[in-house]
Image 1 (cartoon, rainbow, N blue to C red):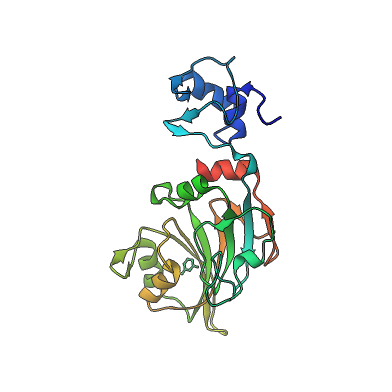
Image 2 (image 1 turned 135 degrees about the horizontal axis):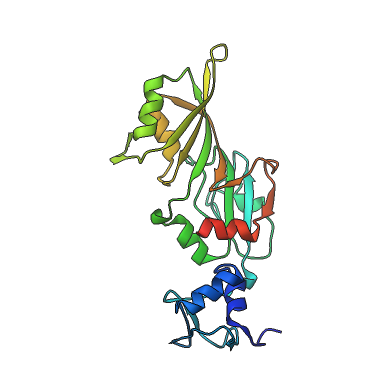
Length: 240
Ligand code: URA
């Protein structure tokens, strides 16, 4: 029932703060307040939506109605809730009753992992630069990339007026016959069109761009254009 009392550690865990055991530790460490007072006992019960619970000074949001979706975005879809030019948007692919929005963005001609949610707090945390979540891309480039270019991509290149942070770059393949190279690039920034601009900065033309992973969450088991709910442990891991 909505207003039944529950143990504080259970409430914190239900809200996605941490496992129940870890929440007990947080309570004992004095990190949790109930109605403005620090509580350091495990027996205490609270009434959700009535008692005001704070963790680390911030209100604990009841995540009961929050949803987290992983979409394998196809190319040709715009990452926005509503497009003024009436183009297809990623929300045309995910029909749910909740009002979800994309977390960050993928360009129209980039495919791959995109998270959508109705949890504003999650979006704030995930997109905050200090969070530094790794994003891994498979990039197909025209031509055979030079070793020095790969090294420059690793060290950082100038895009607009910004020097990119060190990136992990692996050469997946070079194909002389087709005259293409394929790289795996992992970055943890989120500048606009960053991967395309990085490749341009070393003189390479991007033929295809796919985001294979956000953190450890891989889209390889999702058919392009399909989606699934994120598992609780995946959400927790992203927030760590
Ligand atoms: N970098 C890009 O260039 N495009 C994207 O969609 C994502 C990262």
